[in-house]
Length: 134
Image 1 (tube, helix red, strand yellow):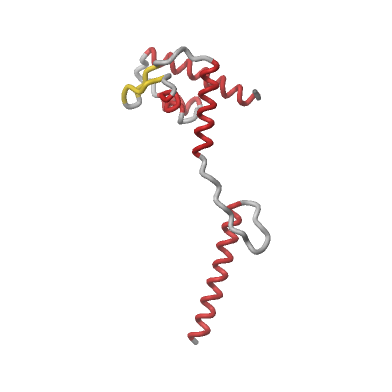
Image 2 (spheres, one colour):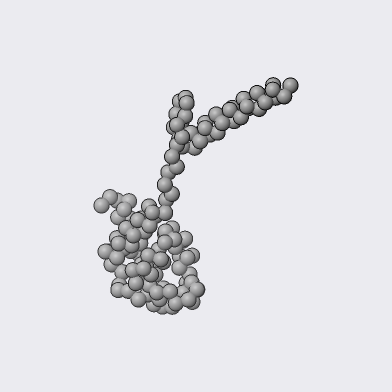
């Protein structure tokens, strides 16, 4: 396991302990969404924890800890699930149209080049129509 991944797991492990404490203490001002922002965690976390029956939603913005004590395996599994959800959420890359000329290094550049060639085609058609009308 590389260092970046292990530090992520450690961060989630620490947050799971913090979350369990806050939920068990029924801290009146605790908001999981605010804590996730402060800890810089993925917004899918509550969904993952609910799906894994670690926490249970008891009302709008209210949760209860129903799972076992946080463990390293729980943190690793949570990070893995969140990463898989994030991968699924990314849109598929758009196909890049074939261009007559040098290909652009980026998909956006390819789209711009395609639009420019179409504008040139339309300009040519407009000029031809104007000549015919004259």
